[in-house]
Length: 153
Image (tube, rainbow, N blue to C red):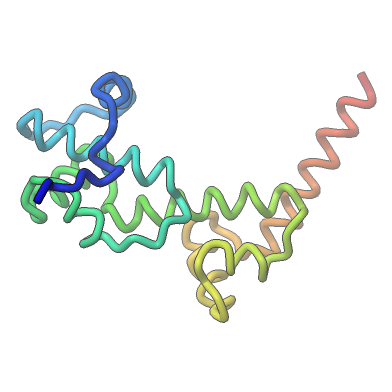
C-alpha cells in the first residue's frame, strides 16, 4: 500500500526557503529537517488559520519527534504551536469583524466556538487586549477617523 502524502508535507522547497528568510534565527542548532518541519507547520497554520486540527494531528504529519518539533517551533517562531494557532485564528476573526458583514456570534461560530461565545470573547481578549465588542467599537472609530482624513484631503 502506498504511503499517502498529506497536504501539509506537499509544500515546495522554495516556499520553505522564502519562509525561512522571514523567520528569526534560532540560537540553538537544529537539523535542516527539523527547521523545515517547523516551517511546514507554520505555513500550514498561516494558510489554514480556521482549521480545527489539534497539535497532535499536526505533528503526525511530520517525521520528526513530537517533543523535538514542539521545542524547535517555540524557539524558532517565538511561541508554542497552540498559541500560534490561536494568534492566527483571532487575526482572522478580527479581519472578519472589521468587514462588518458578520456578527460577533457568527464570527465565533466560524472560528469554531459554536455555542461558546464567552470562551470566544475570553480568547479574543487574550490575543487582542480587548473583548470583541470593544474591539469592534474601537476599529469602527479608527475607520471613521481614517475616512474623515481622506475626505479632508
